[in-house]
Structure formats: structure tokens, C-alpha cells
Length: 98
Image (cartoon, rainbow, N blue to C red; front, side):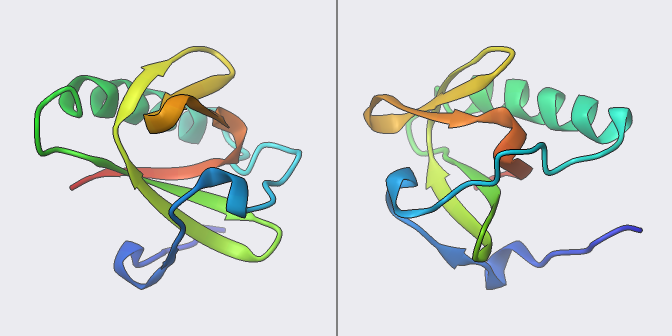
């Protein structure tokens, strides 16, 4: 079943430590996981510009939350964001560019 989320209506958080992330991967299909990875790589490239930030939609124990940040790097398990914080890739539901 597909879930459609309006990113503008999701509550923002300013620090990743404010939320409790789910321990399991929030995406179930291989295709969705591939799309997430491609979008993270694009966001990492694009946010190297001055005024561009990415919006990461996270699935938490309290529902969906978003954080607007620059992506400094991506590997197989984590995304490095501003202030040297790590976000587990499995907690990221969607990626958007502002």
C-alpha cells in the first residue's frame, strides 16, 4: 500500500536528537530503497551549494518528522548532516530539495 505524505504539513525538528527513530527500515521494497539512495546522493551533491538544503522525512515513534539540513556525506548505513550528526539511512522515509 502506498502512503502519500504532504511534506509541508509534517512537523519540523531542529535537532535529530529530539526524535526517537524506528529500529527497522521504514521502506519495504527494494525499489523504494534504491530510490531513497539515489535521492540522498543527489541531495548530497546539490546541498554543497550555498543556499540549498535537503528535507529529510523521518519515520519516528511519534509519526513522521522532517529536518531541513545540508547533507555532508552518505554511506551504506548513515547520512552525515550539519553539525556532524549521523542519521541512519533506514530511518529516512523520503528526501526532498528546498
